[in-house]
Length: 120
Image (cartoon, rainbow, N blue to C red):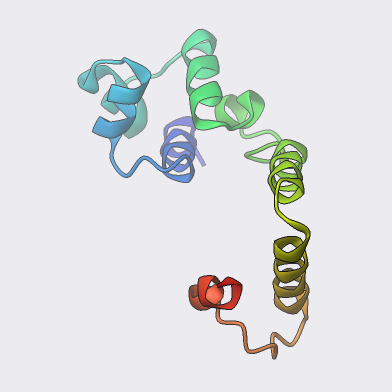
């Protein structure tokens, strides 16, 4: 995967559907950002740091393809912090859903598209 392809993947995982949305959020001109994403122009480390920070991906992955895309420990920390803010009753409900989703046979009956119904 080339750097411009990693940039596109980073943008999408960050929730920006289009390059225009990302350019606006970054404060970049659309032609400049689009050139970086479509590969018609490269970008250097300072711009890469900015993109990595905004898209919450690892700089080394974005620039060189080294390692994972994201720092899983920070994602785990975020999930746990949010979980800790829930009431004990909701924590137990969420924990039950997660346990059932983690079963290898997935025979729990929990459809990921209907998880909200299970919680309510």
